[in-house]
Image (cartoon, rainbow, N blue to C red; front, side, top):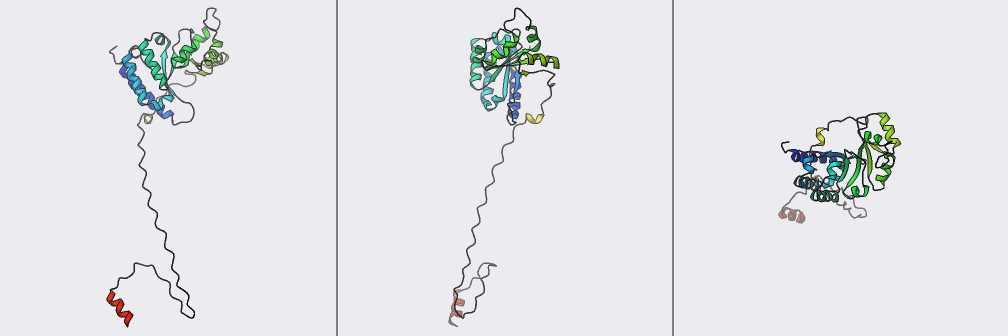
Length: 246
């Protein structure tokens, strides 16, 4: 009510991208999803801010899903739809959630970057025996799959509902029956440590010079091997000359 929705959404997106970065280091196609407030979806300025954040961290967007209520999607203006397309071009995937009916155009959804449709399990069950249903729930998963969109059953609360969703051909589900909400570990949000600079490799020591073998002289006593205990002793030219002429 005080207008802080877009600011909080920018913080939520930054946190979600930190989780996406963490999931990117793990095996499997893992991702995190996040929602934005209605004030953000109705403001092209707020969406542009989020688009810049996504552009900055685009290497992590492959592990991120942005969820959008069905009523919001239907009410987007041309500017917001254009920003949606720009995000999608940068690799951002969207999920249509909070469905109130099953009037869906899979091709149009895919063109706007929608890759998941989250339908409440109760809504799907209500439509099973309805004579006025827009589409039979048992056909919905296959219809969306032909447009490369995955149907997700949302708000699945117990095992009997899980069995019902399987009978309808729904391959993915979300709800307390699968996992309760859990806090994210603080170290996930920590900035990754800078890699330590590679230590300079020591230069290889020169190979020892091969020992010079003395020429063999017949009936000449063997010469002692040269020692390598230290550098040769320096002698003056006068002393060398004195010994040579002695």
